[in-house]
Image (cartoon, rainbow, N blue to C red; front, side, top):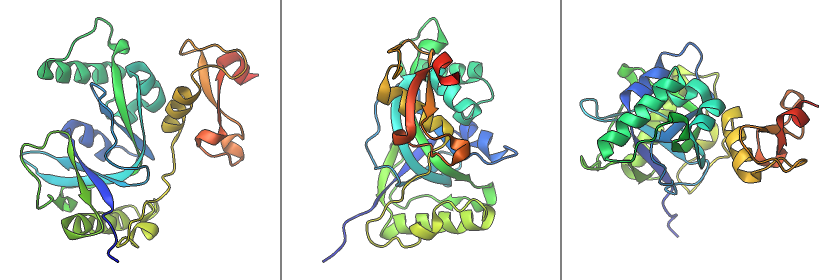
Length: 252
C-alpha cells in the first residue's frame, strides 16, 4: 500500500525579515512569520516543515523551521511576546511594515499601530542559510503564487528540498539539532513535535484561557502567561503547563 503525501509548506518571505535573522549574533529558537492582515493558516499541521522562500531576483529557499502554532492577536501582543523575533528591531519598524503592506493591498489603516491584528504563524527551531547555501527553488513553483505553496516532502522535489535543508542545518548549526534525526526518516508520513519557545507559549496560553484563572480579569495586558511547573525547574513551554494569571497574582 502506497503511503500518502507528507505536507510541508513553502512560504514567500520578505527579504528584510529574512536578513534580520541571518545577521543575528545568536540564532533564534523561534520566530513569528506574521501576516499583516490575519487570514488563518491551515495548510499544514504542527510539526511539519516550513520553508522560507525568497522571491525575485533570488528565487531560492533560504531557510526552514517547523510549524508550531497559528493565532490571531493584536500587533502589540505579537511584539511583547516575540520582540525582535518578529523580524524587526523595534515595534515602530514592525508597525511601519504592517501599514506599508496594508496600503499596497488596499486594506484599512488604523490610527494606532498597536490596534492592528496580525496572524502569527509561529515557527520553532528555524535555521537561516547564507547565500552560498540557498536551496534551489521548487521545480513546480508558479510565479503568480502569492502567500505560499503546500508540497509533499516525502517524494519528488519536495523530498529533495527537505533533504538539502537538513544537510545544511546539520553543517551550519550542528549544536541546534533541529529535529533532524527524526526528519531524516521521512519517506512515510511523519511529523515531529515542535519545541515551543517562550513567545509561542505566551500567545497560546493567552488565547486559550482568555482571562486570569484566579480573578477572571481579561483586559490585556493585565493577565500574563504563567508556568504551572517553572521553566527553570524543567517545566515545558507547553499549553498543558500554562495558566493565565493577573500580573500581581503571577508574581505572588
